[in-house]
Amino acid sequence: MSAAVIALYFWTYFNGTPNIGKSLVVDIPAFFLASITAFICFVSYLWIPKKIIFPVTLVIYWLLATTAATLIISTGGTSSPFIALWIIVVIFASVFGLWGSLPILIVVSVFTANQYMIGNFKVGQMVVIALTSILPLIGSVIIWHDKSANEELDSDSRNYRDLANELSDVTSKSEVVINAIGDGVIAVDGQGIVRLINPAAQRIIGWGKQDALALNYKSVLQLINQKGEPLDTINDPIQQVLNINQQIRTNDFTAITKGDKKIAISLVVSPVSEAGSGVIAVFHDITKEKAEEHGQAEFISTASHEMRTPVASIEGYLGLALNPQTATIDARARDFILKAHESAEHLGHLFQDLLDVSRADDGRLSNKPKVVDIVTFVHSIIQGLEQKANDKGLRLVYKPMPDDTKERHLAPVYYVNLDNDHIRELVNNLIENAVKYTLTGEVVVDVSGDDDQVIISIKDSGIGIPIEDMPHLFQKFYRVDNKDTREIGGTGLGLYICRRLAEIMGGRIWAESVRNKGSTFFVELPRISSKEANRLLEQEAVKAKQEINKTAVAQSDLAVAPQATISLQPTSTPDTAKNFVPRSNSLTAEQIAAYVSRQRALAQQQAVPPRATPPQTPANQASTRPQSVSVPVRGPGQ
Image (cartoon, rainbow, N blue to C red; front, side, top):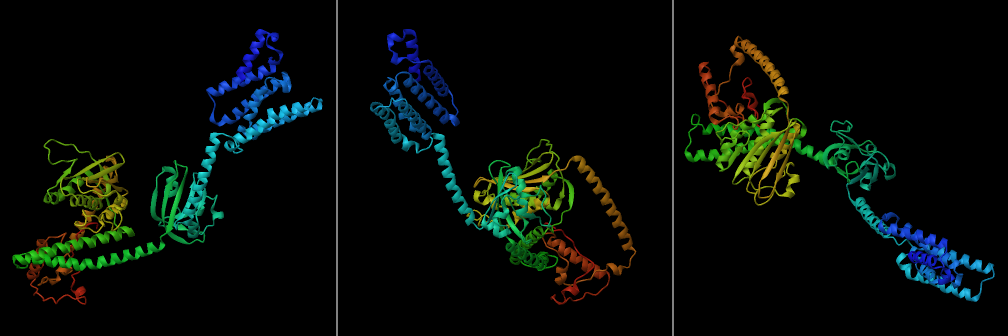
């Protein structure tokens, strides 16, 4: 429309007014307004940001309406030939709602008032104004009202409105769900300010909603560690999640309520969107569960400790029965006793595992670090398990030091300063598990690392682990329960003990597995440099030399002391063997028998007549136990 006005202007300019007619002359103001309108239309057609589509379109409409009004006024008013242009403009007024309709109504009112004041307001003009302005405006409202809904007809505005309604619905539903769950929920923003706290959280920690909102989370959810100390930034799980943007689960913290009551909590902190954007902390009170767990641990520890002594006695007696020097039995009886001996050993291992679990939970596991080359150390462990793998027809491969190559192989040196017994028990358990759950194929052990860490991997070609069992794999008493594992025995304590041992040594353990395609277990341990290892080895050598000197001095003093101070109580029967013999998985039956024989020989040399030992009962067992001799043997985990 603006281009048509511009073209008409140039037509009258080049052809002259007499040839065209005065009523079609476009004056300078109308030409100027039409030019601006056309220019803005052209630019906005090529490029316009979505955010300003509505205001730019409205400006174009106002310019077009002004151009039409200027033409009508300059070409005869209500008798102008451009009256049709005005009708078209008015019809589209309601597209812009009140922003388009109200200015048109004001212009028509001003024009009518002006005509009335100058005495030019006649019936004919009233009809023209009604037909060219009022009726088109009413039609515009009827046509565009439903589409505009008295709002801007802007797609982004509609989308925004729909999105706002949808978010409002989601927020309402989420609030209902959060308020209904029994766990405490606290939402914290990137600055650590509490933005949401549900009724369960208010009930658990004693903070009201109005009191907690807009406060720092450290004031609302006050956490302390197991020693009763406030958490620093490094150990604070909420701050850790804000920094690393990874979920953290823990049962190791205690919360202090608003009434200064201490409660044990299970805490899960999850990130929201990008790092530093905020977190959601979900927690519940586990004080009762912790108390029950502590009671169970105390019972397990006491029962295992008390039952280990009679089991050791059973193992000792069975070892003596199997020894030809101490007993004569036929082949059938030997088979029975061997099976009983294996069962007693298994029971002893179970009690030892239970003791290790209770010690790990109570923090009583010893930790005596010693420098060792992990590659060589793991190789010695594997050598002791090769026979077990061969019995199942499996290949046990150690990649740093392979046995099936004649070429010289240079293995890297990875030093660690950790408890060697813990490393042995951890690696031994993982390799035994790999052999146990692998029916055919091989078990591959590898050692790798970097400047700070050493990683031991144990890969098997076994039955694998279902994905749903992976999160629970290292929990206490948890076993994968399916048709492939039911025939394989176990207590569900081995991997839990491995995890605790790894944590005690400052490392970690994890697994990767695919069902029916095998599993790989990884153990990450802190590494020390060669320089640091040499320094610690020198210190250990000096300390060992001092211990040897002390032992030599003690033996010299003992040699000149009266023999009565080191006398051995003789025995003529194996009844007292249980007072001397530890578990038979540490000493063989032959060693037990040789020990008893040496006692008897020593008694004969001293010319002490053998003394019949009465049967052992709880009443006299303590009195017949020798006090000056013992056979200390370190078991697994001790």
